[in-house]
Length: 215
Length: 173
Image 1 (cartoon, rainbow over the protein chains, first blue to last red):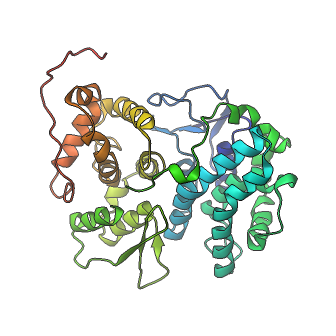
Image 2 (cartoon, chains in turn orange, yellow):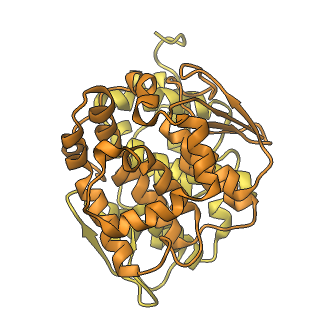
Image 3 (cartoon, rainbow over the protein chains, first blue to last red):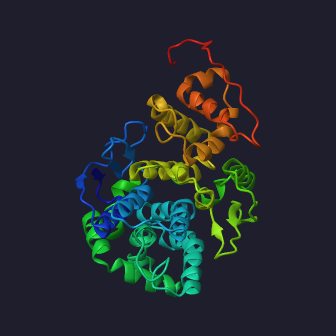
């Protein structure tokens, strides 16, 4: 099993954190953003996991889920639901927010773009009243959502006093050894600026409203 | 559309009692009202739940690696395929065509939930293709035709005519 990641790529934060948390043995190799390691994809896509059976995983959430599963922790339905929300609701907004904050210096606009998903997360955490998204123990959903939001929520310029439950939960998960170590490796303490070269290679995001969602 | 898709999936799985659904937000995300707990939200989450309810776990993949590949395509369906524009749809078809070159089904040799959800998601894209384009994406078309002819899969969707013999040049343009 071999994991390919690149510096300053926010998706790689997720898989490194999951790898450390799950404690799975895996070769990790840093590569250039431009390296295309998944033979059937036309655009480079990192992280990429080469499975023991020769197949490739290119979806960060599927990689995280797999890491937890091989370590004996199955993903619950609640956990699956958070992973789906992260991929379909949070990611499009996040990509737009990172584009604005990292490349355009529009930090106020970036926080506005994320207001919807952050409110949803905040309400869910307040309602559940549990330390983690799916209960009393940290799950793959916590790591995925926390790592996705990590660059934004750790940037002092983007911090806001709203979303108190999100802040408490985020501080709890982000303080874990696996998140600290993953963020150190991927962002190297440079915060948002660490992602500049990665963001410059991404296609400009479409505005959140133009994507049609389910047909 | 997602609700009809879930109703068709219930029939395919042989679930006797139809579930109650609603949809949420502008994107019409399906919600399953669950008597035994909080509602389930999202097409992938609900589809996985139905498969477990029908006690057909093999549809989610046999080994851990297969399950990861199945999950990847389920996520691809809702995050990449749904709502893609024309240009993105061409990249998707091109990538899938290469991926399916040496595969019968989305996760290799065995039919899984990934085939069902990818079939439903790609249906509108295939409907838009000319015969000539269908030949260009020959592996996708072959896989699509195989899935649409599987008993109990097509349900609410119209069949797409696929020519089994090439009528255009064998060389890709």
